Image 1 (tube, rainbow, N blue to C red):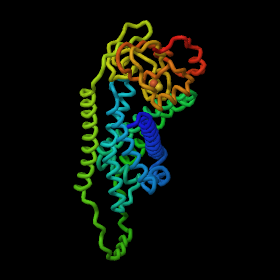
Image 2 (image 1 turned 90 degrees about the horizontal axis):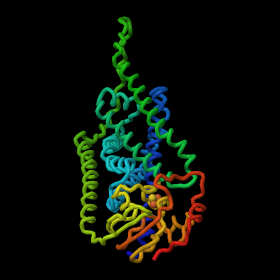
Image 3 (image 1 turned 60 degrees about the vertical axis):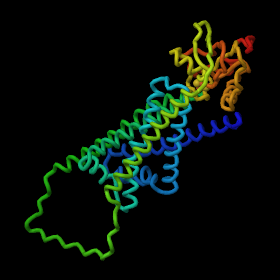
Image 4 (image 1 turned 180 degrees about the vertical axis):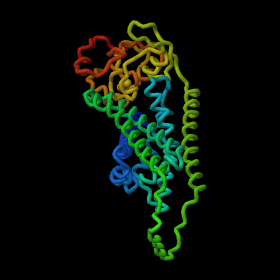
Amino acid sequence: MDRSLASVAGLALRTTRIVSGLFLLFFVTSHLLNLSLGVISIEAMDAARPYLSTIWSRQPLASLLLLSLLVHFLLGLWAIYRRPTLRTNAQDVVQLLSGVAVIPLLAVHAVGVATLKIDGIPFGYAQAIKFFWLGAPQIGLLQVIMLSVVWVHGCAGLFTWLRAKEGMRNALAWIYPLAVAVPVIALMGYAEAGRGVLIAAQAPPVETPQYAAPAEKPAEAPSTPAKERIPYEVVKQITNQVIWWSLGLAALTFMARAIRLALQTSQKVILTRGSAPPLHTTSGLSLLDSFRAHQHPHASLCEGRGRCGTCAVRITLSEFPLPAPTALEAKTLLRIGADDTVRLACQLVPSGGAVTVEPLHPADYSFKDDDFAEELAAVDASEVRT
Ligand code: FES
């Protein structure tokens, strides 16, 4: 594929991944807000349910949701396959593992809700809380774990995305507390609603007074044929298939990635950064991945996604010609006002030989009040790439 076409495709895939992820995060947030109302009452939860929960099972939102989930999952696997290294920081590892776990954890909830809808069984929070706290507490616990994992995955992705954007520092200061407060209040709502159900279950039954008139026999329902419901075994089978297919796809992705790296023919690269001793690495890795592989910290606010520009380095020597920047790299370099001796360490994969670079930012750099472009322009541009 033509290089610029591949870059544009890469940019489109990344944008799709962000948009689908934001859509899913919106879905989880509205569910958590609905659960939070449990601190008031189950009636309050049910009153808000049509606007915060069941709205997602109506068309076209239901189809969009399913599509976003599938697309986001598959693009996540594609990103894992393409990653040169999995050596990264703790937040990135949490994001990666929670991403793989989302579909298996979501399967029970999604298949259950779809079955109830197809069977036409009305199921509000009054029934759900009773079911999760009295009928099947293990499924209730699974729901809590599922929401927590999806939330952690979504927040990790959101932070990585926003951290890479200049001017988002103030917004993040508001979002961090919300990321903790929203699930905590939702869990409080779930626990409070459950407590009410448990207390009601332990209360003695109300005695019918002796003199009370016998209850009227309910009128016979018109004899319409009962709708056949989906058997439990079928529901269980579908759920298991979703779980095993998603886990199987994830396992295949890791295997394919290992094979790709094993088959990759690479040249030796001697990478020197500043006054540090040279690193012996290969042309299969980006500069950032080489630094990480050797435990050399390097600024990378967007975790190597080519968006923040904080990993920028000035190339002072390259034994062989360097590949041209991709559309994504060129866009970020243009945004930060870089000249043509500057490249992004997360995007540049050298062809081989000796490469010497000067980092433009310290490893613990973060966007502050300073202007990145001005700072970059101030750097001495006298050194040139060979
Ligand atoms: S790490 Fe953000 S652009 Fe390289």
